[in-house]
Image 1 (tube, rainbow, N blue to C red):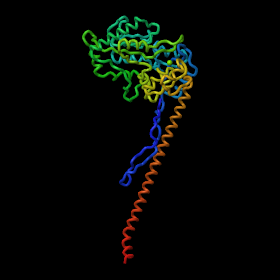
Image 2: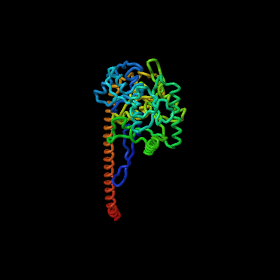
Image 3: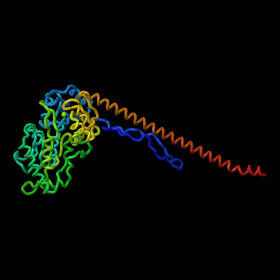
Length: 413
Ligand SMILES: [Mg+2]
């Protein structure tokens, strides 16, 4: 969480002085100020509403209203994959929280945008039925096929998971790995470096689209898919919609998508592309969707690993709330939140304190810079005065030196 970096108290520089160099020691400001916070990402389950229910956490509505009134850029970032974004927004509206699908960044949306932008071939979805609408335009593999997938997407299927489903996912990835070995190529990887012309894209889709795949990869893919018979062997991309370990449901804790993805990774010796918390990519994309750099954004969540640790790994700050799945044990897992708040209701006060702290730090920095300049000016003036005194002294001594032999001559005579 260290946002301020300590530097040595003094700095030493060489200043030119009458053809010579003088060592000047000045006091250095002791901190580097963290970028000002300008935007907010917020988890849903366990932060805005109670886990597995439709009960709004007290103060959540007011906090969202505070963000709107103060025109603070914000959006929800959720791994929830049992509903599409339209469904999530409708659920929030039913709770009395104004929300549209565009206010939500979800792994399914990022994955679908990425697959569409890469003209992915047959894709196997292991997701909740409602999530299929997010993948409109993505060609889907027949539901019983066990070979021929270009992409395998693993999400939260809840009670629909069984051995047959998991084994089918395994067989698809295994067959794809064999194709990968035969093609001697590698799968493209999404990342978070692209930006629009003004450097501030408007939506994660813009980030997930263009240049992440190396050109030769894309060329290989395009060539493979346009070959004889409509499609030739190519690389397979295993995509995990988040990689949470567990979540808190209305009837207790439940296994999240992470253990299912890990099972396939372990069995096939592959690594999934994780589009979702705790992978840093989704935080980076969400921050850029607000037109901000990750360092300018804070994430609010109830999951110390998925929300706080992931956000901090992406360069954001992370605030942990003691609601939802929070446990006291979370404070001893090696992740240090930038703040631990009783609930999201306390966020506006924390935000304002951060803004005031930032303002004071900037004021102190300006004052220290002015003081440093004054100190340097005083040192230069003192040295110039000393130099003048030395010159005058030398002139006096030279004058005495010229007159001394004459006086001696008089004395000697
Ligand atoms: Mg949560």
